[in-house]
Structure formats: C-alpha cells, structure tokens
Amino acid sequence: MAAALTRNGRPNERWTKINRNEDEANNLNTKSIMITDYKDDNGVGMPVTKAESHEGRKQLSNGMYRIHRVLTDDEVAQGKGTRWTELEVHGNIRNISPALWELRHLTALFLNGNLLTRIPPQISQLCNLTMLDLSHNKLRSLPAELGDMISLCHLYLNSNQIRVLPYELGKLFRLQTLGLAGNPLSPDISKIYHDVNGPQKLLQHLLDHLAINTAPPPDRQWIMIRHTDAEKPIATFTVLCYNVLCDKYATTNLYSYCPTWALNWEYRKFAILKELQHYEADIITLQEVETEQFRMTFLPKLESLGYAGIFSPKSRAKTMNEEDRKYVDGCAIFWKTDKFEIEHEQLIEFTQVAIKKAQAHENMLNRVMPRDNIALVAVFKIKETLYTNSAGHRPPMNPNESVVGTPLIVCTAHIHWDPEFCDVKLIQSMMLAHELNKIVEDVSEKHRIQPQQTPVLICGDLNSLPDSGVFEYLSKGAVAKDHPDLKTFRDDPCLNRLSANVDDPKSFSHALRLDSAVDLSHMPFTNYTLEFRGMIDYIFATQQSLARLGILGALDMSWIQSNKIIGFPHPHVPSDHVPIMAQYAVIPTSYQRPLPPIQHYGTSHSSSFGAVGR
Image (cartoon, rainbow, N blue to C red; front, side):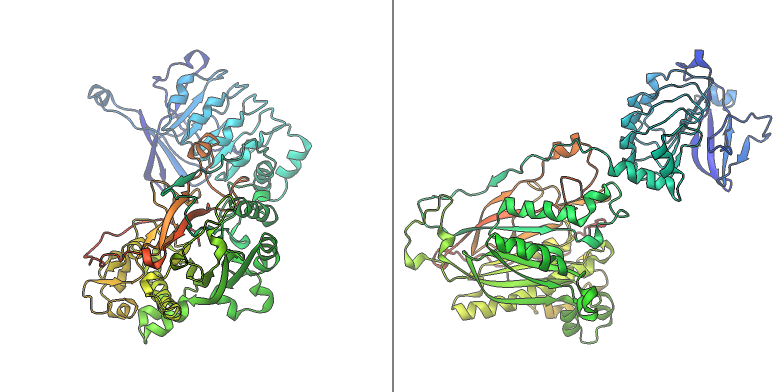
C-alpha cells in the first residue's frame, strides 16, 4: 500500500493509512487504506471513503492534497515495497501496541477518534514526528515525555478530558499549532489559551514555569599540559576568554528553547559574574559586553575583586546618540592590578583598517569595510607578584632571569559572524595580525628586545571553526593566496599590504608565530545552540615567549546528554558560549629558542560552517 501527500498536485511525501478496530490493534499488516481531511473542529477527522472521493484525491483546508493508491496484485507479486511516513489508526482503539514506538521513521501520526484514556511515555521515541493528532479521545492527562518531541510542529488535543498540561510541553519550541478546543481546561490555562496568540503564550507560560530539576553541571576539570617545580621561580598567569551574549541578542526568537527568565539579563549577569569570580583568572577578555553593562555591572564588580578594566564598543557607536550608544556591544579586558600594570591601550577598528588599505579597491570597500567589528589591545608590564606560587610563597630568583618589567600584549577580538562572509573573517584576521605586529615592533623597541621575544596573546570569538582559513592563517602563520575562503579576494594583490612577506608569491603571512591553547580533542565546542555546535572561540599565544601549562577542560557532555539539553543559554549556562581558559609561563628571553622559518602553503581546502553567533 502506498500513497502520496502533494501540494498543488505535485508529489511530496508518501504515507499509508491504517484503519483498524480494537481486535486489529496489534496487526500492522491490514490492507484497509483511506483518505483523511482536516475538519472544522481542528482535528484531522475520520477517514473519507473512496466513494466520497472517486479519484482518491481530496484537497485539505490547508491547500494540500492527499492521494492514496493500493498496490495492484502484480505489484504485490513482484514484491514491490512501499515507503510511508504517516500513519493513521482508527476503530475505537483503547490501547496502543508497543510495536508502534518502533516506527521511528514516522513524521505524522493520527490517533484521533478513538477511546484512548492514556498515552504511554514511550511515544517520545517517535523522535521524527512533526504532526501528532490525539483529538476526540478520552485523555485526562498527558505524559511529560511529550516535551522531548522537539520536532513537533502540530499537536492536536481537541475534544478530550484534559484539565491541566505538563509544563514540559513548553519545550516544544517548534510548535506552530496547539489544538485544545473542547477540553475542560482549568481556568488559568483556559484564560491564556483563549487570549490573542493564546497557544504561543501558553507554551511560553509552560516553559517559564517548568521546574528546573536539572542539577548544575559538574565542575570543569583542569588539564595539565606541563608541570612546574614550585620551588623554582616561574612567572605564571591564567587568561580567560568569554563571549557573554549581550542582552539585545538574547531573544526568544533566537533561543526559543530557553525560558524567558533564564534569558533575562538580570538573571544571566549574576551567573556570568559568578563564573568569572569562580575561575579567578589573572586576565579576563570578554566579547559582546554592552557599553552600559561594562560601566554599571562588570567594572564595579570586578574592581571589587582586585581587577581594573578597559572597554571599547563596536565602531557603530560613533554614529549614535548618547542613549543608543549604551546598548552597543564591544570588547573588554580586565586584569589583576597586583600582577600587571597597564602601559598602553589601543583600539583596532577593522573598518578603518579596510579604508586605509583599500586604496579605492571596490570589493574591499563594499564587502569588508561595512563590518564594524573591533579588537582591543592592552600592553601590560609584568609585576613581581607574578612569581608568587599557589601557596603564596615567592621563591628566590636570579635577577638576570627575571621577567619583571617585561611587556605582555593582550588582545581581545570579535570577528564577523556571518558564515557567508568567510572571506571577511579571514581578511579581518589578517588585519588583526598586521596591526598587532606593528604594536609588537613598537613595544619591543621600547623594551629593547626582539619582536619575536615579545609575549603576545590573542583571545576572542573568531566565529570560525578549526578547519577554516582563519584558524589556518593564525596557527600556521600563513594562508595560501588562492585559499577558497578568500572567495573573490583569491590572489588579490590588495591583500599584499597585509602580508608580512609581500614578495611571497604563494601565501599571505604574519610574523607572530602563534599556537592555539585549545583544540578539538579537549574542547569539542565553545558555542552550543540548537542550530550550531562547534569551537569558534580561541586563545592564541606566541610560542617562543609563552609556555602553555594547562587548560580548562570541556563542559561535561554526559551532563548535557542525560538532561536532554538542546542548546545554550540554559538556566545553568548563561551564554550560548562557554568560557575557555589557559595557564601560561612567561619564558625569560635568555631561555627562549628561535622557531624555525614559516613554511609556504599551496592551495588549501576550504571549510564549511554554519551560523555561529554575531
């Protein structure tokens, strides 16, 4: 038996309808096949016989057609099979065979017009259902497990005996239709449901009142890369990088799976500050910090914990009035004042760099220049307290091996988000390295050291996966001039102005010699939402001058899976990103070893990655 579901007569899906009475409930091989339609009561309705529709074809109220076709005897004899994704069960059914839960390929299930008094929780095993009709039964309650069927778009519960709904139904964020007509709903549910946009309001009400029985995630484990001798004087520090998801982006449209109270900034800001206080990093780099929240929330709290901070909003703030500027997000850097002294800060505006480097280049002006992303740079001078170990002891040190007074350059960056603009991401990264290298040259000259001896950290949300041109360029020091991620900028001579070696015919390069603190083996994702999961946040450090000692491990995946968490934010995770953190030792110049020359790279593969934030 086979049939097709069509729009305007064009085949779209295939389905079968099974009509059975109570004695046939366990027999899935029946040959009865019928058409159904959506009736005025919002249910799918009882089957329509072939006598009512001679061609076996009828238009539904939603504009779609249903067509059925019974296999001929010859087709059956030939062993021809059928493919169907919809199932309808009728005939005063009182109990459902457990075999039904094995049909996980189903996308639509019609159990309306029966005598069902309960729905087993095992129905959640039908994870591909987009349509479920349970109308015209005798249901008094629903299993909480219905809330796990997040593929559902249409749920009909009309004409049952339901008074209350499980709060878990609020998790059905894809639901477009919720039919509850003809039920003796409790007054509070009925009032919400019959309001304007009632079904949507009811789902949000259920989600917001869903009791969070989930325990907080286990503490993330620290992963040691190198061990140090506590009795030897080694200057070590920790750095944390975190996109905190600014308030204006935390909308129910983007994060419909999160309760509104857990999206609210007043709730999330305390959870974020609690995280920062818990990790107690010596240097904190943040992205998506709103201007007003830096002034009113982050700076006062972190100053009370012994930090100082700097901030800059995205370039668009320059064009806004004072009130609107408060809500522009940007980048911030905080540091412990007992360990570092700031010498200089500098803003890198990619828009301005594009204008300077474009020289009337139309593609650069039209595609790169309008993206107002920024990077913020702080130049620190290391204090003697950086040598204090965890026990508060400061081992004696040889003055010739001391790094006290040595510069440390820290950068926080937020690269453009749109996956269609991988060329812009890569060019912004090239601009970042180019501008940073100029700062390195100035700082090294001032401190009378070589540029390659200057410690540099680049932290940020780069909106790029580890197989991207951005990661290749930063981690390997060069990217092929014909790299696919460059799109229309492939082999474009306008980018030579951003390359460390303008004479290199094969690649665009930089001179910073960076190494990533985190990789996929330790950190499978730093951004976790319904639509995208991947590592897009990074900490890069100059290998010659900074030795990585350890990193903060990943969030416990078993906690995510066991609690069926489909994305962040979550009541226990206040941003769609998770913070990353690393510990470094500053290598004295007398112990530094020069790195081998950068290799040249030919054509490289391109990445393909989805929407990854803002």
